Amino acid sequence: MFLSRNSESILRRLLRTTSSSHGQGNGEEKPPRVSGFRSLPAFRSFQFRDFRWLWWGTFMSFLAMMMHQITRGWLVLRLTNDSPFALSLVVMAFALPLTFFSLLGGAFADRFSRRKIVMGSQGGNAILTALLATLDLTGAVAFWHLIVIGILNGTLAAFNMPSRQSLISDIVPEQSVMNAVSLNSSGMNLTRVLGPALAGVLITFLSTSGVFYLIAMIYALSVLFMAMIDAGGRPLSMPAKSMTADIREGFRYALKDPNLLGLVIMGFVPALFGFSYIGLLPAWGREVLDVQSDGLGLLMTVMGIGSLAGTLMLASLRRMGGRGLFLFIDSVLWGICLLLFSFATSYVTALPFLFFVGFTSSIFMALNMTLMQSYSSPEMRGRIVSMALMTFGIMPLSAAPFGAIAEKTGTPDSLALSGLLLCVFTVVFFFAYPKLRKVS
Image (cartoon, rainbow, N blue to C red; front, side, top):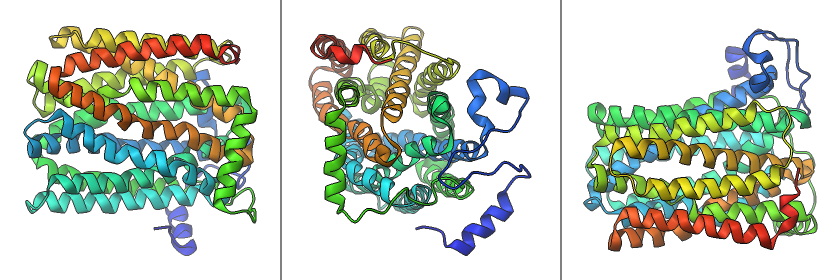
């Protein structure tokens, strides 16, 4: 799936801007003098040419992913007679490979070209989505197809995400990492605003199959943008050790650093209890508000606006003390917002709480990722980031049980329990691991 050297060179000549500030291989770019919005504190990482291309590549990739999420959810509801448990199984199919393969993806990110790993995985997503579109168009699609394709998508994501996140620290200097991670997350969260709304509307005109074809083309466009990046083209080193030895070394590295260990463990708390709403929101919308595809798009869009606001706020901060303590506070607020959202019975009461669920969750994820990159060395960064991303694979451990609870007692009760448990386990870890509270 990787582009050949000649093809890549042609793409660069076609798409390269007239800017004279180029990346320096795996090194960091020197920022040019800039004016306009890029001189503002919140957008200062856009000074770096490679970061701009990474941002656009990430934006296109996650726009496709968000559109895929709502289109796939609508297709699941159609195939399974509005079953929330079926939605949870599809989430599980995507997320479980992140548990089993993220560490391998992190080892790859530290051995091979991070840019080409991202390009290859995105090309694979384009092919899989086009296949799903064809199955849907011909009427041959079945629920098991969604499970199998979800597993393959999740496997590709396990290799994509460690390399994509590690590229940030290859591109920008250390003092700009929080800003760059937050801006990158802002791009992702902007797609949470645009993607669901766009997919929800387009489904009514193009059907789910037509939207899947469009998503495949967006994935292909993200590959072209990633081809423009100079950084991450070569690995930092090519050790003679096996992949298994690399993974063990990553674990030993994290265990020796109490800050990294605390950040990894803390990432598992919301992964288990904070993300149940992602898989259950379509079922909640049908059960409580009787939404159609455009109404579901509105719910997802408002949550995306909250996420965008959260990461932009974080990006605008030049310095932030007490970041470990802030993680705990933010996690508790996230649980409270999710609990209050579960009691909503109308758009008027649901939308504000969805906004704050998006706001608090995005701040937590961006800040946790920033700290993990800041506390890890360049040659270990891919493996450390993969541990953080492995928490996404833990989501099915909550998605399936909470989906089963929703089948028995209703989706609102399941979401309420999820928010309550997030608060409880955050408070427990706050007292059990005091070192994390002191991380600055």
